[in-house]
Image (cartoon, rainbow, N blue to C red; front, top):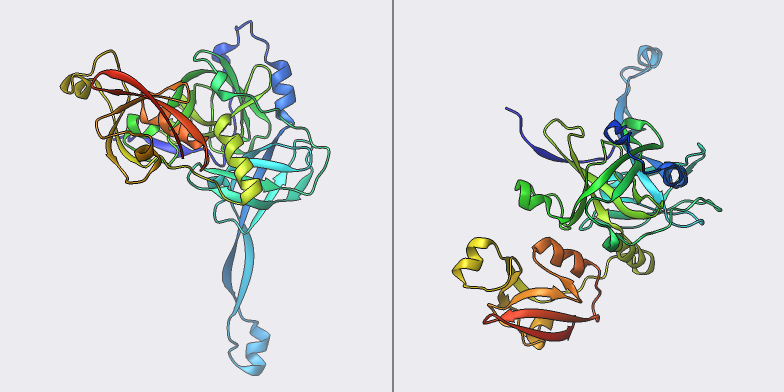
Amino acid sequence: MKTKSILFCSFVALSAFNAYASSPVDFTDAAESSANGVVSIKSYATAYEYASSDPLMEFFFGRQPQRVVPHEHQLGLGSGVILSADGYLVTNNHVIENARRLEVTLNDNRSFDAEVIGRDPMTDIALLKIDAHDLPVIPIGNSDDLKVGEWVLAVGNPFGFTSTVTAGIVSAKARSISSATGIRTMTLDSFIQTDAAVNPGNSGGALVNTRGELVGINTAIYSQTGSYSGYSFAIPSSVITKVVADLKEYGKVQRAVLGVSIRELDTKLISQMNFEGINGGIMIMEIQPKSAADVAGLAPGDVIIELNSTPIQTFAQLQEQMALLRPGDLIEIIYLRNNSRHKTSTRL
């Protein structure tokens, strides 16, 4: 029996997507500019093995103690995106995890050892640095401006095939993988879903719009076979920008806390609670004393429907917005209480 699984796309690249060959949209400029800004990342670890004894030494001096000899072996292969001309790169944390050495190969075949500046397992983002200058850079776009149905390109190194470009459309935004599959992948669970072909080795590679702007980092696929079979998922560039800035400045991510336990509304709960005029939202179950939510005057039973002018219907949408914020940020919340809209603000 086949089982569905979520697979991270390290040791992956992009495949051809002939289904859209007849489209009048021209991807050539975006593909050419972004291919040079995507790198291949090989991760290496050190293994140890016993060296066999020298028969001649054993003949003259008896049995010799076995020697432990270290040797390097490749752990995996993924992709990365050049963020600055002076050598800063972003990739997935799972691409570089447990590696003792990282080798970055540019599109022009130059190779460099990479230093890990910081990594964040909660968002699966890692920031690397190589000693290089005047590198081609993919400009960062705004993932919030993406529209469902918009064309995007995935660029990476699937199965080791360097500089592979595939095309597809944005299938959904703020997509929660775990809510659809029951498989928990990582703490950040709010992705750009596309149907651009992504395979192992594409992890850490670029998702770009038709203007060649980075709108996401390809991270995972939903598959019954282990290879691409319909949908892939990318971390939004809005989250990447914030996490990378934190890693560069602090070495770790600065996370804000609202101080609530919550439940996502579904149609059954909306009917049971007699909520009116909403199709979703986040109901507050508990408030931590002296938290930002407590100071804001929120209470159990309130339903958050908007955060900083962004509609909130699902946990994934709330999670993505909170991932953009730092301690000390002032936020505005629209919520329902007794089916009446209220507005409040608080400092996280």
